[in-house]
Image (cartoon, rainbow, N blue to C red):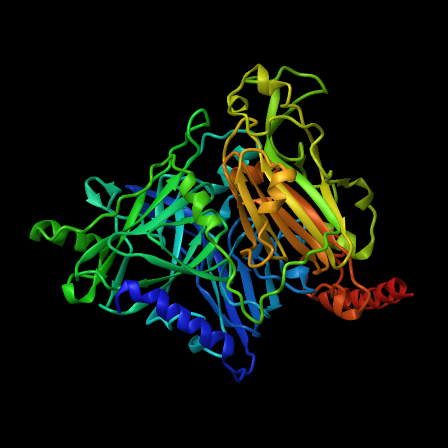
Length: 622
């Protein structure tokens, strides 16, 4: 099948998808055991102790069918506290399984176990799981694939010959726990050593002249392949290309999109993209290249690395091992074809890639709510707080601590011994110390002025900020519209904003400063893309809308690790509804504790929880 015929085939599959009557298969319970431990791995002539699941990097792929229940037994044999976040899984009425330390649960301590149990309903496509503790998600991550309950034949695109997770990541020749401690101390001098595709560094990196192994995808001429692309990196948005081939993008963040043909995929940390590739090039070898982008000067420049794997046609009869393949091709003169990549500072390609995504219109697509109950205008940027007292010298001064902010407030965990979710659920003391996330920043200015990026007098007056446990409460069912505005204060980056427990309609995006008088007219309320991670463009804005219909305590944060560590986050609290079906369930009986109630056996804690739940529901409904 030629690539030019793929969109036609996709259109035909969409028609079938919209009109087919299917018989649903029975749901199952999918169980996994995740043993978190440390092991030595050697790359770039250096042995590094890394924390992994089941001695794999990336970790095991969790494959489920829509409607299944999942039980993942986490056995923590590492020296680190651990939680696992199921990125993009909505966790309906089950915020307890969301896996954010001290927000939804106490961490799993070393030599302790915990089982995450949750249902996967109303979702199909590619998500992923990762640690939500410090920087450990760089090595603790894996794919989470949700297949249609009625089989691959019901995909709204041609049935692929194979489905392949492509996990883009980074290799750190450093102690990641130390990297996290450094960031907490405002030390930002730690960088990754390489980029990876499915854990392999590729032949652009070598040890004493011997090329590192690269990922190799073997294909058969004429076959269709579904690449499930995941960006698990801590710091970089990537461009992905395969020489001589095009992608047909069919889904993003486990939501189907109108098929979109392109030769490049832009994917930021936290995002997933599903794309079809037809093996219709002349038989041979073709590089699969991932290249990170970053904001141009005057933004801070950091070491970021391109890596590459290979797409190899089976008819070429070449070795499967990536390194051997490259050496063989050099000896024979059969050169591997490389794609022309965007420039490292080309951020507009990402802007247009995301702007070209629209939702596939089908019977299960939820319409965009037209009535808006709450509106937030949220600026994203950096700032500083004084190390001692209220007054200090700003700019390049050791008297300040650099922080990341939302509406000029940097998030900090409250001084509580229980997670926020438990405090909210049981109405315990401590919730009164929380600060409401403001509707807008404290002052208006030219948010995207490039002169604010470097230290200097212009940014210093805007630099002072504060730290607080910022939350926003929403009544159940409220429609919330948020405009994220990137600012130039000490940085010009894009910001991939991830909301736990909900998907967002991405209504519009733009460059420069948001102007409601003209930009509301650009809103797509017919078929906007639906995402759990929204890329706010470099020195630009993105407008989103979501329905707060999942009760619980949910993180909203930037998925760049240094922004997360510096406080670019807030907590969204969604209240219970008026029925049992819209009320948060009680915590599981083996829920981890942080010292309180540690003298209670799990069954005693569970019984007390059930009694409390009955009383709480009766009081709230009376």
